Image (cartoon, rainbow, N blue to C red; front, top):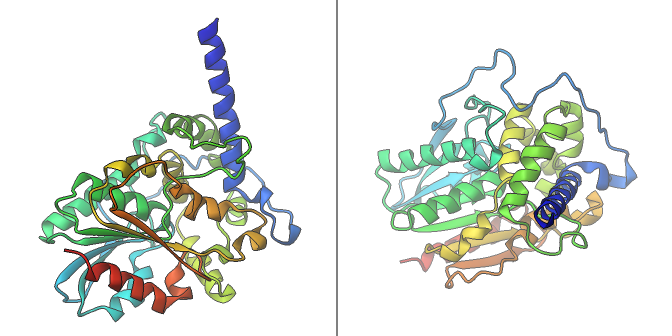
Amino acid sequence: MKAAWSNYNEAKAVIALALCLLFTTVGSVRCQDQCERIMQQDSTLNNLIDPPGYKTCPLGTLGGVEKAGTGPQPMVLIPGLGFGGDIFRDFMTSHLTQYTMYAVTLPGMGGTPAPPSPPETVSFGEQTWTTGALSAIEKLIQDKGLDRPIVLGHWIGGTQIALRLALSHPERVKAVILVSGSACMVPTDTARFPTRLSLDQRTKATDLYMAPLWFKTVTRETWDDNNFLPGDYAVNPVRGLRLWRQAATPPLHVWVRYLCEFNAQDIGLSLDSLAVPTLLIRPGLEGAAEESGSKYLEGYCHKSWELPVVTGGKFQMVTVPNSRVCLWYDQPSTYDSLIEAFVNVLD
């Protein structure tokens, strides 16, 4: 009876967590100017599989690689979800003599085909697409003979791959730079979830509830109305809208797959074994909460790094005021200076 009660409480916790994560992700609790958000579902949809006629790429390949520069230090740049490697083009153009840069596009982003969706019985905790992209970048580093590259990861997705590279190959990665990185999904309901969620809770909430009961049948209109907002990407509203349009380009099933894999992980749990110098550049997010009616972005970019671990001085954080997720557009000089200062003290 005691075991059954424990299982019952665990099930309740997972369901509550799923609801909390759901309403952290969608916009019903973050109404901009009290605008009622579109919440329609379509039971005929299945965003967990490939759309009919969708042409896929092999798992373990990249959508694309853009090379720039002839500098002595190799660098691999990994964009966050929604973006292709061209999001780094301004940075690469400005640093042609300092680095030899490889900006990758994750498969499915930037107008490229995605890998086949795994069967619905495969847990998002398996990290199928994320691990496939990681393997492709490992192969890129090997094939190009890159000697201890600096790996720069952006936002959701880019963070996970960059840190996993460093954790798996500390002898082959010189340093990691995380730009607006997010370790995991952090519920905004701190009263109900005052402590860090377990990996098992995250995976079960995604596999059993969020994916099949929300993401599977969400319409594109509902998705665009409730996913990240233009003001999340840049302070300037015109720039933010442009970036939002760019991030919204990938097909819905591609966004769903990558986001659900992100929700079913917590890279922060591995930071205690990080042996590679890592710099996290965080956006200040001033005004973001007021604009969107919630502190969900603070959860992604700030609270997800509140970790009870010791990283031996390898992990450092700095916050750039008056900036959002694509902070190099908001504060380009500060951004460049921080990277330059960090790189200059590396061995």
